[in-house]
Length: 132
Image (cartoon, rainbow, N blue to C red; front, side, top):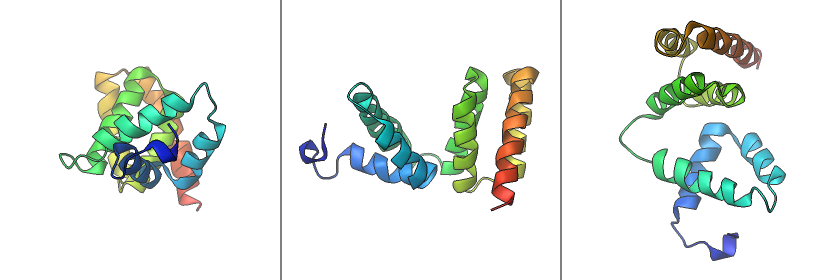
């Protein structure tokens, strides 16, 4: 769906605002520029539903949504997504200590090996964050 077909106030528009706030313009611009006819509808779907319907809800603060998302990425072994969402968690206001606590909690409920990978990724992201 192109921008001319969207209605004002569409969940896509709200989702794009939140997606940019959480993931950063650079990431969203890269995802958009890498999209093609095969992936356009997927990009539309995640912007509309994940970002425009769920992340825009008032029921949880963004730090809580980030903590849940980090846990889900660890549980599923989605390591590239985990890296992206550690950056997002910091952007959303989570502290490194809060992220560490999520990883420790995940060690018990997701597995120690999964948390081990998460700590490795988190360490790399936090090093980048501290060097900015």
